[in-house]
Length: 153
Ligand SMILES: CC(C)(COP(=O)(O)OP(=O)(O)OC[C@H]1O[C@@H](n2cnc3c(N)ncnc32)[C@H](O)[C@@H]1OP(=O)(O)O)[C@@H](O)C(=O)NCCC(=O)NCCS
Image: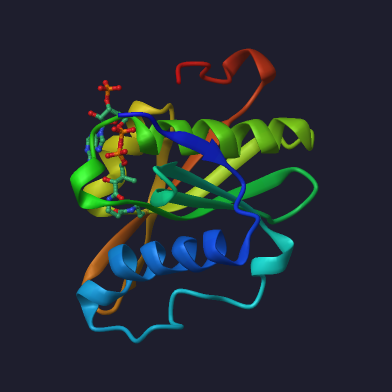
């Protein structure tokens, strides 16, 4: 199976991007369509992975300060999990941070995803918030240097 990693550009790519985000990260908790968006989408860096023009993985980098970026809204379609798609998205988001001379990437990981991020070099900083009264999150951090960028694809 061949996967393409890129920034979404066309209206259809953005539609599929937000739809996957909603299906994986919001719909299972009964959250309505639209709840997957926040007010700063146009200021963020977005990545999609597609297979035959179907979006199967997404992720976003937001710029918290001149020196810190945050990964949010990571989602891979269930049937494509554990194929390295999440790793490729995180690598692309980290590369964007490196390109912007940002040295720290942080994120709030859902408890079941903590092991995924540990695999990619993130360390738990502290327990953070509970989403929808159900999903415990953990603040995780990685300090980046160009040499540390994981080049596996
Ligand atoms: C978490 C998620 C993004 C991971 O994406 P993925 O494409 O399945 O992950 P990859 O295949 O790239 O995994 C990379 C490595 O992490 C490991 N890994 C993946 N998910 C893991 C998990 N939940 N726990 C522990 N390790 C995990 C993989 O085995 C792989 O290790 P390897 O390189 O040694 O083989 C995906 O499972 C997902 O969308 N989950 C539901 C939504 C979610 O929780 N999003 C994160 C919100 S913070």
